[in-house]
Length: 161
Image (cartoon, rainbow, N blue to C red):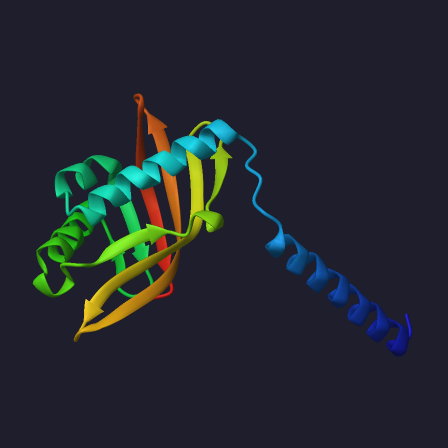
C-alpha cells in the first residue's frame, strides 16, 4: 500500500472508530438481563443506604471476606481495611454529612455466568467542607458474587479521586 493510501486508510479508520465510540457512549444502556440489572441496582441501593445511614453492620454483610478494594486515591485494601475505612468515615465528625448517590443513568450491569455480575457506573459524593459544598464524581466497578443465596461484592475498583 502506498504511503498516501495508507495514511488515508488510517485517517478513515480512525474517523469511523471515533464516530462508533461516540455513538456508543450516547446510547442508553440496555441490559442483557433485566432481572439481574434490577437485582444489582437493588443491592447497590442497599449498600449505599447503609453507607449514607452510617450502618457499618449492614456494610459488613455486603462484602465477601476475601474482598479486594482498589482505590486510585488510597490503594488496595482487604476486608478488614475496607471495613476500617468505612468505620473511619462514619466516625469522622467533619464528614458527618458525606453521602453517596448513584447517577442512575450511568448504571450498567453485565452477567458473569457461573459467578454473578459486573456493576459499573458513576457515583456522586457530596459533603460540606469549611462551610462550602464539595461534590466529587467517581467511577466504580463492583464485582458481585451470588453464592449460597446471597449477593456479596468480591472486588471493587473506584477511580477519579
